[in-house]
Amino acid sequence: MNTLSYKTISANKETVNKEWLLVDAEGEVLGRLATKVAMMLRGKYKPEFTPHVDCGDNVVIINADKIKLTGNKWADKKYISHSGYPGGQKIINAEDLMAKKPVAMVEKAVKGMLPKSRLGSQLFRNLFVYDGAEHNQQAQKPKKINLNDIK
Image (cartoon, rainbow, N blue to C red; front, side, top):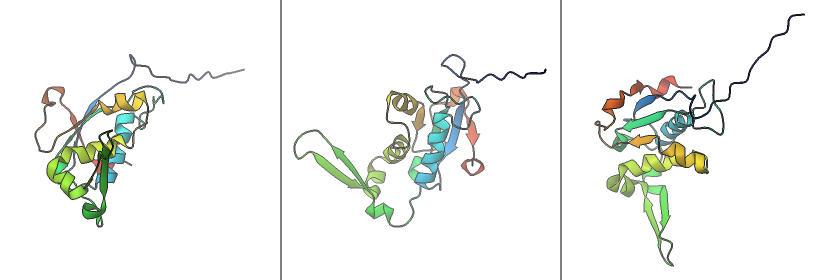
């Protein structure tokens, strides 16, 4: 009798294979960009994906100031923050936030799509967002990824 034995691969911090990926956000819609980047940070496309381990890649996003929003979101989308003090709520729309901090829009969109746990905080540290075409991760030699090729 021939029996086949299969082993389930469970990755851990030492055995995971992390890469550096470069994403150009120029002309990309914010939500679609954020979902694909969150998937890359989480590592869900890898065959050795393990839900409780950081097995995703390090992602560098450039040209964050050239993203697009569809519909009337530039005027209607609101970002709310609170200082923790009474009356400390601040509301800013997308157009004003883009003028002040274009990196913050992309970071908030991606962070909202990651797990709300210690693992999510750890995954968010693997994201590097820049508003121009230059970035500080040239030494890691990130591999350029076309988001339209990712399903």
